[in-house]
Length: 267
Ligand SMILES: [Zn+2]
Image (cartoon, rainbow, N blue to C red; front, side, top):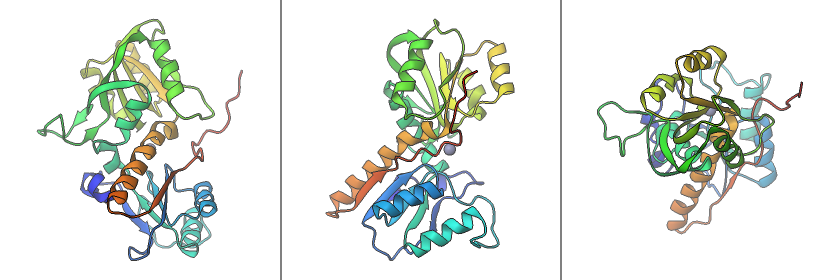
């Protein structure tokens, strides 16, 4: 069912998606959805009694020669198997899916109406085909500063605030978003005729050069916060699809903040 919603064939060639550990024949009663497959999330899964963790980020991206418990990832595999908890990841295939990661982000920051990918699959129908990022409209124009406040309120709390590049009084209406690190889409965003682009992990040089040639405005959010809203969608999808089959599988969205940045120091 996860593969029906998040087709593994949509994943980037460098990506690693699907079942990481676990026996497909084992029963699943409780499914925990989380952004990162890290120790804190495993603790949450143990406490709740989860049988399966569905994570957005892969545990392993490159080839591994062993999973000795002498590394954090190897230790995690040991703990998962000992606790009989499976791990499944849906990463870039969930990014491009419709609905996918950026649809959930777009709704969380207040976009309404139809959403289209920032970068559709070439030659495919832009209304339906998978694609990266989303462009949509706010219900009414507002200032960049007000949109930043609305976006901040709509995203889960992390240590750091949103960072904004652009005139806070400038009006914004058409908005682009991309969950996770979205600076590879900057040129597509500029071509998309939007007023502001919200994503995560924007670096100094790409952002500075983008603003030097006139923008649009940029908003940089915490990576974890931009992807977390998708967990609710994925959990709801699983629960309703399995519920329709008459099962009583329970889902939960992880409440553990696993953004890398944990403290902000005022000057
Ligand atoms: Zn990510």
